[in-house]
Amino acid sequence: MSENTTEPQLAVIILAAGQGTRMKSTLPKVLHSIGGRPLLGHVLATARGLQPESVLVVVRHERDLVVATVLDDAPDVVVVDQDEVPGTGRAVEMAIAQLPDFTGDVLVLSGDVPLLEDETLTRLIHTHRESGAAATVLSAVVGDATGYGRVIRDPAGGVERIVEQKDATGDEASVTEINAGVYVFQSAALRAHISLVGTANAQGERYLTDVVALMRDSQLTVGISRAPDAAAVLGVNDRVQLSEAARTLNARTVRRWQLEGASILDPASTWIDVTASLAVDVTVLPNTHILRATTIAEGATVGPDTSLVDCEVGSNATVRRADATLAVIGAGATVGPFAYLRPGTYLGDGGKIGTFVETKNATIGERSKVPHLSYIGDTTIGRGVNLGAGAITANYDDIAKHRTEIGDHVHTGSHNVFVAPVRIGEGAKTGAGAVIRKDVPAGALALSVAPQRNVEGWVETNRPGTAAADAAARSRSAQKADDGAQEQDG
Image (tube, rainbow, N blue to C red; front, side):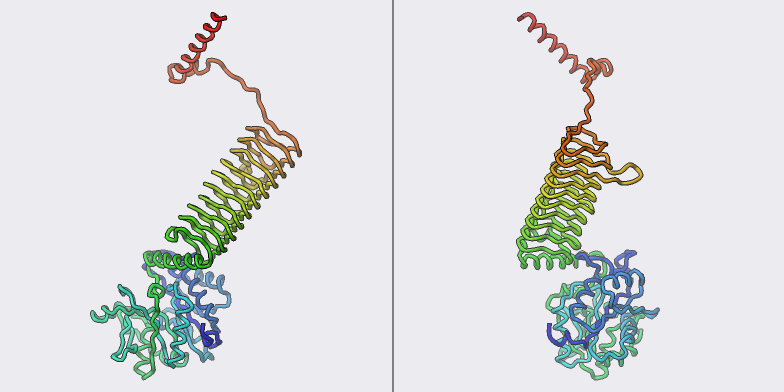
């Protein structure tokens, strides 16, 4: 970043007042998300990276919802309410009125252009200041310019005007250099011309683009800076463009982590939010989603077929074919395959949550294992515990949730049900099939055994004519024949 862009002589105006009807959504366009942030959140992050003196966001449609998102992300932002007069020109006019004493440069960004990077804007601002232009436009050359304003150049190559799609002639519509909707203005020149913008266009709006022609008419210099990556300046107007922007951002994010030392085997099937973090020597296997504030420590392996939302994965842990949200997985721990970690799960170092295990609001201590076919909810498990297959902590009594506590070094039999609230003492053991309704003292063996009773001939009596009855009859006859033969031999 050049030194000029870090000086407190830059103000940023972000336009976020539009409805975005082509999204066909009740949610404002700028609040649709890619990469773990709303579109507007990406623009705010880029603006803050330039260290401006002020950031102003112009809002109107679903005003309260947009403002809540803005202030949650950047509480120091100045919110500007656009009135009933439509158009980007009116939005900027109202924003600049909030800066009556500001004499620096004004950068205008669109809240639906999320992929702009600091470097592109830094180059734009540098070009603007070096040329002494009253305004500088960011442009890009695209293969299909449909829907975008066209940059019309004069014979000398300068900017003559910007024509919106609906106002373009046939020749103008064939131009492939588009206006990115990003500008830098000298504040004094902007104030002098913004109020002159009219509504003589197909939309009946006050276009900010008309300021360029007005400045040219005043014999002021209008510069241009062409973005090196056209995809980075394209706005999002519908769901198709939203998904395209998401793919572009994700490819950029994946590549960044690869260059930082993570092994990502299949970038095309791996999705990583910009808010997530990967350490060196992390391995990410195909079809894995690392979302929101997830952090993955050094040497961990995640995937394949795994989704992590707001999780912490410790060093050298392994998480495969798992779905986890708001969970902490300790160093050297293993999760999966086919595990479901719900919020509040904490797995200690060296622990295991195995195949077809669901956990919720559960703390599982160091080196403790829940290997398979279990539900562990509202539970505290100590260190060195091994739960047998099919363990269930019955935490809900139809009125309230209750906790199960299992002490250190407890080993349980298969198919145990722990009816909370209940506590299993340190070193205790339970038998297979036990239903534990009472506390178990430390070192005790807990059993819930009923004598097995066999009712001979029940199937043949109660299910006559069935395949089971016929099989039982054949077996009974064969057994009698064997018994008769043994008696003759005897």
